[in-house]
Length: 308
Image (cartoon, rainbow, N blue to C red; front, side, top):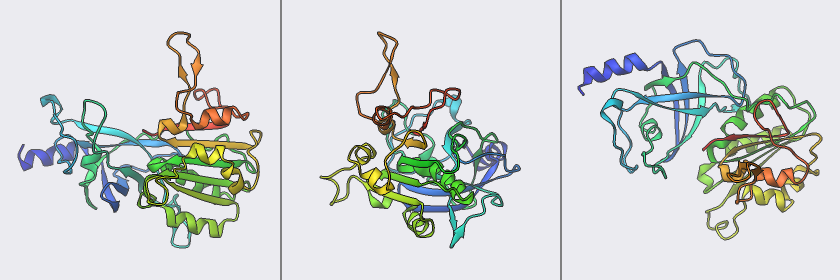
């Protein structure tokens, strides 16, 4: 495919530009995308799609890809939760005036599926000014709708699963939420906590906010791994919160590794809903009186987004 054909494909399919790019490290980035179209109405916690053509190059060191001839001129797309920088200097960022959307993305080098990762190896070669596709529709039920002022709000995540939580946290702080807010994020290494410094500043400014960072593969934590589940069962979360977890006035938001979340599955023999073998947060909390959402119509006080 020659350069003219590539340019025509990009002109035909792309409707947004990269206006900010922060490579946190080789496998993690924060990217802001400005669409050519008017900024769609949305609320924190929702998601949209990003896409690039199969014709775009992929970064080295990733699983080899076999492209079908019929896919050569098509887009590969994936849904991403919209994130938020939260702070602009020493004050909350004015997201209402922002003409861009922030995304928090990890490079997927290998897949446990037959198909090689298609999108992130291409996204990681983008530069400021690069063009790409962004969906015009923003949607999702993972929002702050159930939260009332004065409620305790917990944001529990793994890795880049904290992206929608950052946006929801910004919204709560902006509206002056009076209840306790706690966010915890579990990652492999400290370098994977791209927003760590922001959260430290927030804790100094907002007395009702607490942030807990958990790592599992640092020299001082690899033999003493603490996952989100452990944070709850050990009682440490309640210690940091300064109060017991009360299902009557607490909302829990979960985003990240499905094993951490622990969504109930349907037993193929009985048809009944059962907890997965790996102990997840949903099972831990439901045994303490909480109730997970079951679709958008039957809402509980545990809300989850299966990010992976």
